[in-house]
Image (tube, rainbow, N blue to C red; front, side):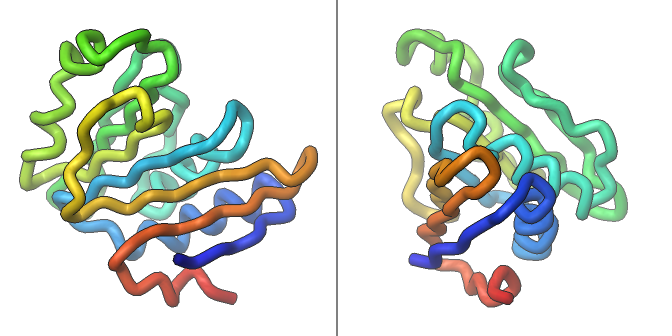
Length: 149
């Protein structure tokens, strides 16, 4: 487990920017944390690093898809917060993203889903330490050296 601190929104976005270098199709990134803890900011950093300019929170659309320029994959950014039960989660068709060979799935509020595969899964836990500071805990088999200062 790697634990990192962020002192600002821009530092959280920068961590996402660095993390983007690890992305490959088939990867599932699960973002845990309370409202306002930095999950979407981190995702915005990932998207910016990959040339996606208009990354927005999928709070109301539930899933946003972004075509990654210069690569042959999409980012599916899901926010499961507003879903009330497993039937609603199942209706999204997340398994299509999970099984796709041309997709990276980033899911906020993954605890709303009862099943995530163990393989190719990165879990990141966001904790608000104060108004600006965040702690990010990474559980992954990936080499995360690119995130270290």
